[in-house]
Length: 185
Image (cartoon, rainbow, N blue to C red; front, side, top):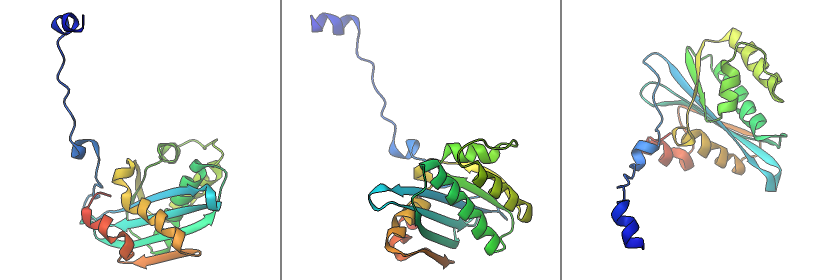
């Protein structure tokens, strides 16, 4: 019976997509712009959240990176919004010129792109980011998958080992350098 079925319905060849096609890599910003990637992660077992931020130029060179441990907020979206706030405040602290902000939370990026007020539970954070943008030159907000945001993601993992916040200028910590060298995020 199976043989009759396969004769009538021949198998359709399945094309496996290569890992490189399905895994987006970090894309550099246009020349003269910077890109700030952010990520947030929840660690319920320790009742903490962690934030990671990395600033790079159009050549992929790191201008600054940050890892921070915070108390556990009420939702993962709120953690991502807090990471976006941290990205913008780092940009302001460093007096950065024009930049693009990129993260892997579609919800947060979508709310940042909207002109109308966010009604989300983290809407006050979106409002504060937009307020900060009056003082700096954010060109746009961009969404990427985690594979295109891996340096910021690994910085969130590193935040487990710090007490509060750590900032590295023109570098990333050694534990994250391998991710940066691979060029995937």
